[in-house]
Length: 588
Image (cartoon, rainbow, N blue to C red):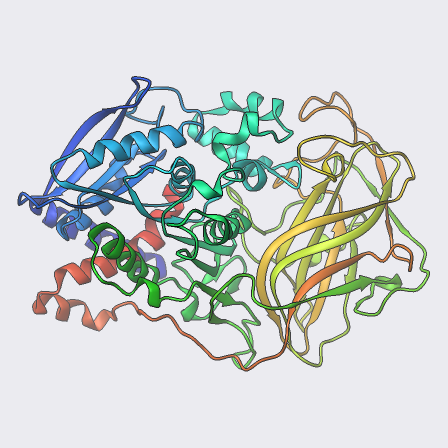
């Protein structure tokens, strides 16, 4: 029934788009870049000759022809809308080099737009995933025509968040994405440059030039998105390190969403309340573009700098959490609280005694299987980890049953004391919520490739038996454990196919001809107090802030037609259609 409803909405949406095609002029251009390569670009304009107006640009590797669902309704509202195939994709010339030319192709396209008679010289950019990533690198070139950006589920550092998280290769995301793109020829280059250097990676990173960015932006992501930390880092870079036009002018939205899941309540194996669905960001987008491309007084500054969803128990309607919270900055004020691992699988805030270390065997030929998480190209979101936690190479530590609710909001880190009999190996950490019925629902997780423990730019191999203090980054979240629940972490050395399984050798990425069995040890005594560090939020009254724009009720569908509110109706229905139907395809 639900899928039938989505299909009906999709059909109705397409019919409306067809009806509006007479109100819009579409033209296709081959726009020359500075090196002579021409990029295929669709321009949607209002049928009546418009006065010079602010424009909206989306650059995509997923075929500009699908952009009619944006171009037609937005042009019908008076906005020149430009949809472009990125270099080497579909109708565009050149070779697909996966964002490496975004810092030049983007500005060249903006300059062309600004030179058109229908443009007032100010351009907003919009797009999710790959269409968001390219926005970041465009902004780093500080093009004068760029007015503002709406960036969704993306990263400003492709190396750190997209390809080599914690030093380990994100196999399922990268390999499968390149395979779908027909661009697997890029893979050897990625393997050959597994250590980070600005010489190689500068075109797909903003780490060295935040100060060059001078535009306001909305950064929207999800706690279960494959670029969760990327979108947060993007906001932080613009907001606190950006140039005069960017600093203090960015917005961050974080929902309980997977990649492309902002339009649905179901995330992984959990269903969140109706208020979790994104039905408000469109209003923020129009407030922003009205103000920064048309110089119209708007409400952009009235929106909070940060708007984030605090996840909680989805089974208990009276449980704290599952609400939106506003903040002036990120991260919120918190106390970093260490939860130490103890013998007998105990996790507590009590400092450990002199316990014996724990050793497990990691066999690369039989890695721990991925089961949910911040994934792409495989099931994502909160999944029950109980079956994974029963494996012999997974160490599990659980708190007592909570008698009070407990909130952690911010970045999660694990500090581990470890050793191995191999020169290299991985360590993984998962953070879960153990429900009263025994389900262990994944919240967030991370990985560390030991050769990169002291930096992504070089290798340091391990000495057999030597103890190392390391930090595993579990990225960020906002979560409240309900009373009657337990906090749990699980430590292991693999999470495949999300990450490439480490062969426990000192050979370069994907060049091993053999593998070793690793005897990996976790230390938990008073001299080596391994722990997970949670950004604890003091208990407070949770003022429920529901979304400030709701979807139109079905009963209002015909009423809006008869009232003549076609534009508003179309906008509302498009948002629903895009979130429900197009996102999974376009982000893919």
